[in-house]
Image (cartoon, rainbow, N blue to C red):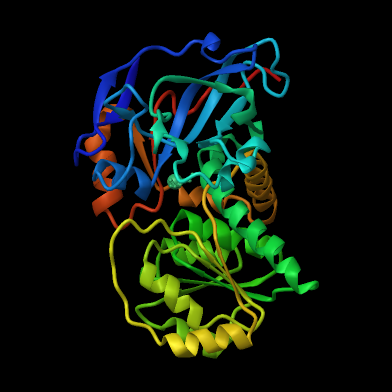
Length: 374
Ligand code: BGC
Ligand code: ZN
């Protein structure tokens, strides 16, 4: 079968290759789930792997199948699989267990191994191919009514985990009732995070570079959030105007912004960092002031990455609630479909050059998949 692969370590190496078809028996103990891939979302991670900034092939292979944000339909299940059946829509988690205690309790998203195993990113093949097989543990059912948003399940899991981590960590304060939040960045992570914080009733400001008016502003406002272009107002201006935020979720991909956020967080606040920054940027900062304010203000910084199946379930639940609260808004994020993996040059061009591409996704199979039997 055909797959979109790269040669890790070689820049701009994306190409279509022929790889072996997966079989249900590739997963032992009757726990296999064979999935036909329908759509795969792509993001900066895929572009950075194709730029050879990171990414590694599975041992023994010299290529890596790309793609970690999958939406598919179950074709076949092993005898020990009960939570999905053929015809069900599904997604699949990204990270696989390593060796630590966290991995052993199903929390491979917080492994303390230096090496992590992620499908389509590091040491494991991804989903940009016709079919894949995985253990039932990693297959998450997507409700039929969310099929049109299924390709956002993985990014939604990342956002759900970030928010969950902030609230869990803030239980240190015994009572934490955040009222205002800033979300920096208005890519898929920024917008979905803003949506989830609106569902919790927070006053949300999204701060991002893209000037107003535009689609990002429209989506933000349809979720009941404020959209501020940082070309017009700085983060300090916004904090002065609307108050210092109790929670900031940083999702710009820019490490200077991540540190700038430290200067506006409210007392007892939490700052969540989600950006993967593969560069080597250096920035000068007022470290004495930041240090003093963070100590005197009992502030908290949380780094968060990935998500396990409970975060996928939380993400899907938020997507469903958002459809009820803000009908039709979330699908506006899905701006740039690309038909077929053969169009890899177009995929990479959209990811790296097209500033209007909010969410790029690949229609690997029929874009309007058949509804499963009820
Ligand atoms: C993915 C995460 C992954 C992270 C680090 C992100 O693009 O969405 O699942 O953990 O990259 O590789
Ligand atoms: Zn990603």
